Length: 399
Image 1 (cartoon, one colour):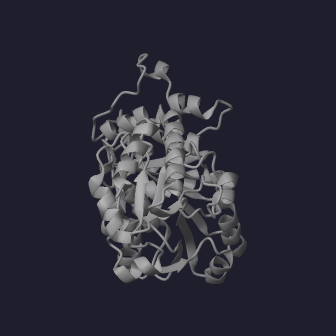
Image 2: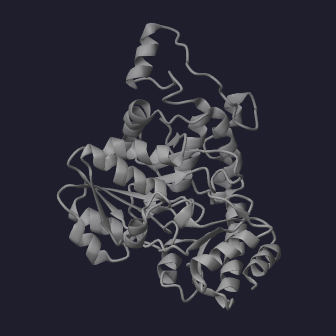
Image 3: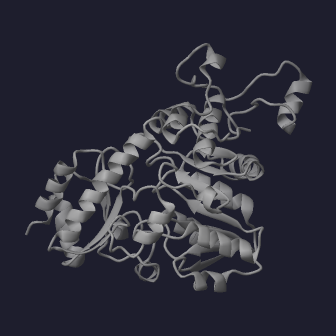
């Protein structure tokens, strides 16, 4: 399966070129879209060789596809991993990976705050099959150390955390896990940053997952996911978690759209970050705003660790208004330019209320326990001119 060879080329250049050689495809500037479900063999021996993995090539598109191979090679290269697997959704990547790595009696140690569907899969899904889901505050290293056990197989977290923007020290958590047991897999959701801003594998993590629906695709027109890590583990996920357990197979057309999106990833992330910084600074100074959660603000409690492990501060912001939930509803209903919608990382500025939308699978009590307040508002800064986004937010915040 494809591997990501590290090169001395810059990130932006690798985003355009890694994993593809037009000379191998009749000079086609873009990778061909292979719309095929299966592949033919010259003889029985060749077919047997491909099925066993002894011979390179593809045999069925639930397992691999030539267009998909380009994307996987490029993602592995950008994340500085050995191999990658593209899937039909971010949840497909997460579930295929965890079904592969854990079984009854194993423990998954997770941060106390997770994206709603990730939380639901673990709390309401894996637990039904005898997997112990243990929560810790990953910004409290003593809490993490105390909860690591002989049964811990996976340590899982997001950073920055969706939706409250806590930033977790990847190197420190990885060192704690490996210090306890070198066989523990450290798994990081890098959706908020993408490899343009943060590369967890270089900081000690074993696996990185993405909702490619977000910044990697970048245009709000696809659903996809990916996992990146060492070649052996990725192959196990491909042949068990994907092939047998989830069937979360990505479409070649979706792959093509992600490859197109990744070509402009660094440029887009620069604009997302620039806009988010300006929005956060405006909100911080606004009299109607109680608190802004954004690691690019110097007084943010996670600013220092963000400076250490991120190349920039990202395009995501969270805030609490002084009027609480009711004030948040009024603001959301008055917006004209920003779109009230779930998801993030699109060209459009998106805004939403996590408690009633992306994190509604938590009960009221679970949200309180896991650090998701009822009045929290989440903003995904888009690519519009910052002056226009800020003007829209200001008019929405006006009494």
